[in-house]
Image 1 (cartoon, one colour):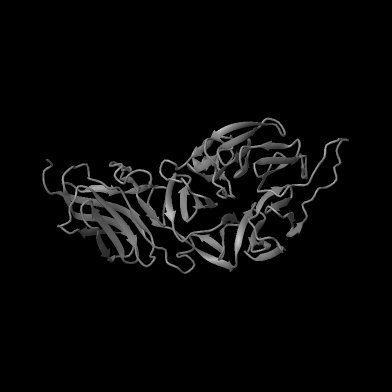
Image 2 (tube, rainbow, N blue to C red):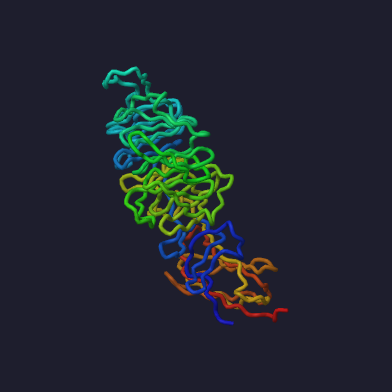
Length: 453
């Protein structure tokens, strides 16, 4: 038999299909993975161990926000502003320590944690209270902003979600609300509220909607998804539609849902980027944010990284944060253990090595015979020992520890035990000691053992 290409690049993790049914293109060598822990994929599909992070400050951090100019974070019961040099400056103390939602309203940042609220301007917090109505004479009654679950700004109005009701302020008056007039009720509690150029995406516990602007504040409600968003997975940062492969101008928003990662276009359509490969059933949202081209999203104890350009997904471990934002060239992440900086500058997780591993298709090479594997040929770049695993369907997993002979990318031939045999085989690679790793190619030389009956 000839040497068979098994891997030349990957299009991401697939945990929905059986390992025998994940894709492998024999012409290009592009394949899906059945395990993809702590790796990332570049634009060509080449597998690399992911980058790490470093702690900036200790404490119980939460609720990061940035509009590109002002960056805020919660730390226990304090609200802090993060400076361009990553210094921390107090804005308000004595809060309840609950998650905070933010939006930019005019020249200030509005914030609310469900029981407390305020406006931040020039590093200072002021009350977010009702001002004096100065318009035409009216019998309407105005109230101040409610203690909201979600807030956003669109078309000169502040929109707030409280339970299953969406309220909006008077035009250019984020402090004045007419609860009897400016409101819309959904069927259940709102889990997502975000604005794009043509309107608002809103999700309750059942479905996802687009409120298309047809005046101010006249909206047409459109059902865009028969599934809900996962709360707290909305990325703070927006994505250029063209960068995600869509030929429309404007900024998109990205979030997690019960059916996959959703990209909301500025024109009101949604696209599921990975729901055909990753199962989100039964998961609860914790966090969502952008790290370069990656949408990092955590649900329960699971953290996935989706490349929104290539639609490929991998899984991260020891990467659990409650909020992620980009500010002044830094990617920041908050956790109960501190404030962290993420990125390619970091080769470990704040001093802890990053263990990575991949597995690919369970395959019979298109041949029904029982077979053994004579050689596996790898193109790999790692500074330390790596492990190559091979498992036949009717035998124990074979594990080979390989020490690189050269520095940089090199070819390695591995001789497999002649006693191991099976119709189906699956192969994988692991690093050791948290070493960096780049996997360029895997080729397999199978030997047919007997004719099929």
